[in-house]
Image 1 (cartoon, chains in turn green, purple):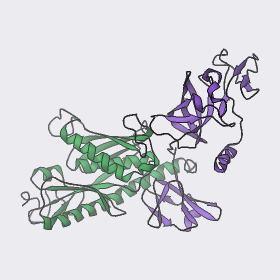
Image 2 (tube, rainbow over the protein chains, first blue to last red):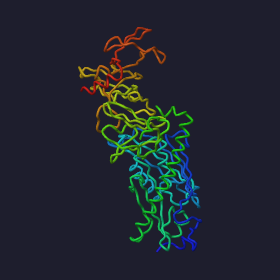
Image 3 (cartoon, rainbow over the protein chains, first blue to last red):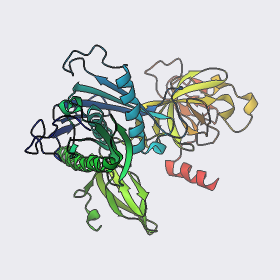
Length: 249
Length: 208
C-alpha cells in the first residue's frame, strides 16, 4: 500500500536513519538586522530563511477591526530544487503553502492583541529536500518569537510517512516523498496538544491514520524541544551581551 | 514559583506555563491565562509586580514592545496636513511608549474642542509640524485612527511660529487660543493644551 522499500531489512531508512529519527535541526534567531524578527532553520538538507515585519498599520483592504491580519509570502529560490525553478512564487503549490502558513500562524498568534494591524511573514526556501511546509512553518515560528510577537505557544510542524510493512516514519525527506510513500503533515500546538493543521499527500488506511498522526505529533514535540533550546540560547546570549539591562525596560 | 524574586535568573519562552492563576495572582503584560494557569506569550524574563494585594506576573520582552493604539489612549502626534475639514497626523507615541513605526491619525473639525464646535477654523487651531496630544476615538470603518482634542489637557503642546522656519524657538502659550514666539513676539492662534502630568489625564478618564 505504500512506496517500495522505504525501510531496509535492517530497519534503516534510505538515508540511514531509524524510523523515529528526525533529521538534524540547526537554527539561528535574529539573522537579519532590518526586519523585526528573523530566523534561519535547516532540517537535514532543507534550508529556510524567515523574516517577520510588524505589527504595523494594515492597508485599508486588508484591515480587520478585531484582530491582526497575517500576511505571508512563501517563495522558493530558483536554485533550491534539483532542476532550476522558473517561478519562485505564484505557482499553485506555493500559493497553497502560503495560504496554509497564513492560517496556521494565525492559530498560534494572539491575534486579538493587535487589532487593525498586519504582520508580514516572508519565507524563502534556499534548499528544498522534503517537508518544505513543515520546515517553513518552524522557521516562521522562530522568526515570530524573535520579533517579540505574542504567541499562545509555539506552533511546530512535522511530517510522517508509512513504510511497506506499516512502520511509521518521522520527518520525511525528499527522496522518501518521491519514492511513493504517502506523506502526512501535522502542525501542532504541542503544549496544549492541539492540531492546527493537517494535510496528506495520499490516502492512508483508516486503521493506520491514528498511528501516523501520533508519530507526527511526537515529532512535533521533539522539534519543540529543539526550538526551545535554541530560543533559550539566543535569549541568554543577547541578555548577557546587554548585561540584562535591555530586558528590564 | 518562588524564584521569580530575582528576575535575572528566570527566563521563559512563549507557551511556557509560569504558575497557577488565582484571585491574587493576575496575568500581566506578556502573559495570558488558560485553564487556571498563566502562560508566557513572549520570550523574556519573568517579573512580578505587587499592586493592591495582588501579584501581576509579567514577562519583560527584550527590546521594543510592540503596542497598538487602543480606544481611549492618549497619544502624541505630529500634524502633517491641515485643511478646512480635518487634519492628518502621524502618531509618534502612545502614552510614554515611543513607537518604532508611526500610525496614521485623523483629527476632524468637530473633534477639535468641546464647545462652539461650529465656529472652529482648522487653520486657527493647528499648523503642519505641530506636536499635539490627542485621545483615540472609537471608530468603525476608517483606515486610520480617529483622534480628538476636545479636552483642556489635549491640543497643541509644541509649536513653532510659521514664519520662523525650522530653527525657530518653540512658542509659549499665552491663552487657551494663542501662542507667542519668545523671540519675535509673534502671536499665532492654536488650540493650546494645558500640560499636566500624564497620570492625572488617565485618572480623569476613569472618573468619566
